[in-house]
Every structure is written in C-alpha cells, then in structure tokens.
Length: 298
Image (tube, rainbow, N blue to C red; front, side, top):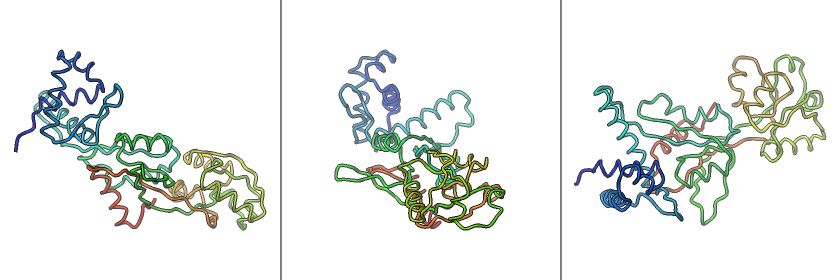
C-alpha cells in the first residue's frame, strides 16, 4: 500500500482553505496547472474526488471535507512538532454541530454531554435559522443539526431526522407568584403569560388550549428565544409557557416552580443528518448514547 504524500496533502489543504485555485497558486508561487496536478495526484491516491466545480467556484466534496478535517489535524500537529518538539498533541476529530438559535441550551448540552471534555474531540458549534442550518448540512459544513421539528423530506433530499426526545410543556413561574393554590384556568385568568411567538408549535398548541378553555389570557411578552423566556420568568414578568428543561436549573434551585403541565402540548427535539457515504462517527455515537439512555434528558 502506498504511503500518503504530505506535499500533495498540504497543497490540497491550502486550496481548500483559500477556496480559489488561482489565488492559492499565486500565493505559493506555482502555476495553476502545476497545483492542479498535485491535487489530482492526491485524488488518485485517495481514490475520490476532493473538489467539485460549481460555476467558477470550487466546493469540497464529502470526501474532500473529511480529508480537510484530517489535514487540519496533521498539519497543525506538524507545525507544533517543528515549533517545540514537545507536546505534539493528540490527534483530534472535529464534530460540527448546528443548532436552531432559539433551541434550549440545556437540551443542547444534554445531547453533547457524552463528548464533553474528551481530548480527542473538537466541537464546533454554530447557530442559525432552520433554513441556514439545513443548507450548511447539505453543503457538508455541518455534521448534524439540532432543531425542534422534523424537516420535510422528498425524493430529492437526503435528510434523515432522528427523534431524540419529546418534552412536556408547562406553565412555570416564581414561587411568590404561585404561592396561592389555584387551577390552571384560574392562573391563566389571573396572571400575565410569556409565550413563544406565533407560528411555533408550542404557541399553536397554547392558543388551541386557551380557546378550548374559553380563556383570553393577558400576554405579557411574545418571545422567540427560549433563553429570553427563562430570564423573563425569573424576573417575574409573568407565567412562562415552556418545556421545564429550559429552566431546569432554576426549578432545582427553587427560583421557579412548574405549576401545571399543559395538556396536549409538547416539544420534540430532532438531530438531523443527511445520507453520507462517509458519515462522521461521532454523530452515530451521540445518537447511540441517546438510545442507551432512553432519550435526552435535561
């Protein structure tokens, strides 16, 4: 079996980070054709195309993304060796995780916990909208996306949605606000509420619930970000409609109380991947850990 040519790998690494063959050739004082030859030789040795051209731009293939992950580690370790001859470091595998910007931070931590603190793993965490994250997943710049709804799939998509957990949604408030006993109906009539913005699954469920109960609650705030809902609940702006996992620490400390579970309202959590020939094994490890634990718990 032939050994990997590290010169070829370094040329590929430079082009992959520049994203432009001409610019890289100029920077390395090479002709563009000479640089192309070096990359083709690496592709021949690996047995896979590393780039695909879309218009005038070069984009990494799936094999190219995996090769770049390893090239980053190899070149960084080599630079450390040349610089210090000690503490060359442990080869690390990168996991790129995207999460919906409004998703519970506690849920994200629960999902990632099996990898936290591991010396051989580098976590790269990004947030954004569902559309942005799914596009990054399709571009292979993310390995897994955490969202709270299953994206649509058709014959043209390669999306796989792994249902990780389903959390009940509750009415949560401060101890002082909830010091008097009362029914769900009484509390919704007597206290302002903090709710998610219109269009979310929780808000849709809440609107349907109060309609069935014949109540028109006073809305104190409509909030997109669960972290902001948590802060508003702590400041006693009103009773918050959210999954208890969002305020797990406050409930444990007694700062907030879960007053009522809201019947028929839940929030589901999904890890979304795409079908890949070379999937990142860390993703399967996390999903397998969830299966062994019986779901992600806060």
